[in-house]
Amino acid sequence: MVVYDLNSLEELNQVVEATIESKDPLIIDFWSDEGPKCKVILPLFTEISDKAPKNFKYYKIDVKKHLDVAKEFNIELTPTFILFKDGKKLDDSIGASPHVLEHLVRTGDYWALYGKYGIPPY
Image (tube, rainbow, N blue to C red; front, side, top):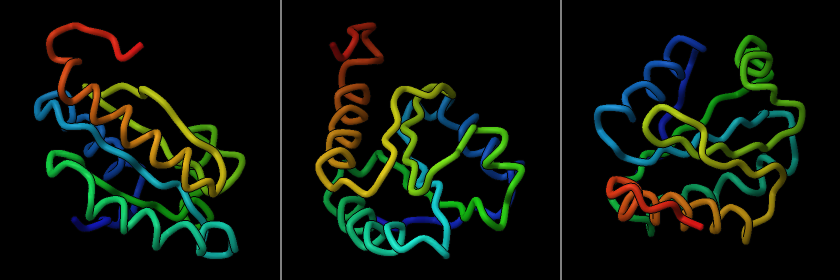
């Protein structure tokens, strides 16, 4: 899988809104090119995207270059990963923890399988 770059708040909102129709989970990495933790976790994020279910979509956006995005999504620390499904935020993870990031993917996978049947993941 590929981790796609987002380049504006408008583009990000379009991608999130597209999950309403597609029903596919989406994880966005709100990162900064200046953050050392962001640079460390980005290769793992890419690796996880390669191993995850094919219905997942992966994106990243540099919040230092797009301050309006940081403000809109209340991003105070980077990296922050947010899981979206059906146009809504389901879960998030702040920091560069591989285990927490993998949990976020598993949560999205569960929703992809069972959420459409109305069964909550917990």
